[in-house]
Image 1 (cartoon, rainbow, N blue to C red):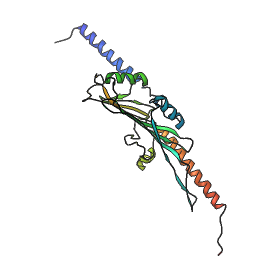
Image 2 (tube, rainbow, N blue to C red):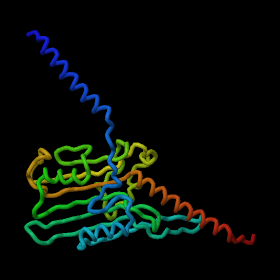
Image 3 (cartoon, one colour):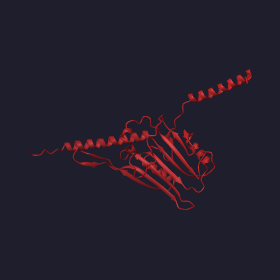
Image 4 (cartoon, helix red, strand yellow):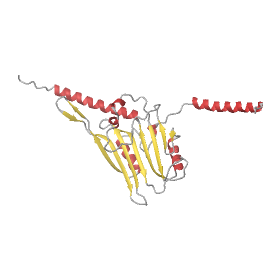
Length: 264
């Protein structure tokens, strides 16, 4: 059936409106989230160990905090030395023994930097067993109220991205008290270019049964959070490497200034 002139005009108007919306959407660049301003229970990336301890105790005085340190080796050419201990990880736990299900809150924090200058570069948190948890829909609402509109999601997670990168450079799934520094978990081939790395905050949600929509009213039985700033990881790793190199150069100069020439 042929369209009337009026119908043609309406079609053109509808098409113009659709094109206009599409063009305006494409022309408006996405604003990257400032991940460094985000916090997880008061902890922001870039905080010192003292600031993190204060935030943890403010959130829950019953948190049990364990700290793990690294040392880095260097040599003057004949003898080997170790740096002062560096805080590399904090493992934080709280177990609620009462109720029908035991509640757990486990937080692993990654730190990097030379001794006395460490800062938090990544965080992983797993919480489960809350007695009266919010629904999936209400939980997502709480997240957007705290962090703003998310950049990506599916039916089980929501994510926020910082800076202009598009690559997730560090996998925090294996982050633990005993795992190696983040930079050492990367294959050597991936340690040369970090220009496309992006800051990222991610919340994964679990409920009873399958989550088919973020609008579901079933309760959130557990959630998993990760947050990392690759730029900060690289910056603090570079600081550590320069620190160790300087210590090695100083030790070598000291040894060379006291060389004992053997009698021949």
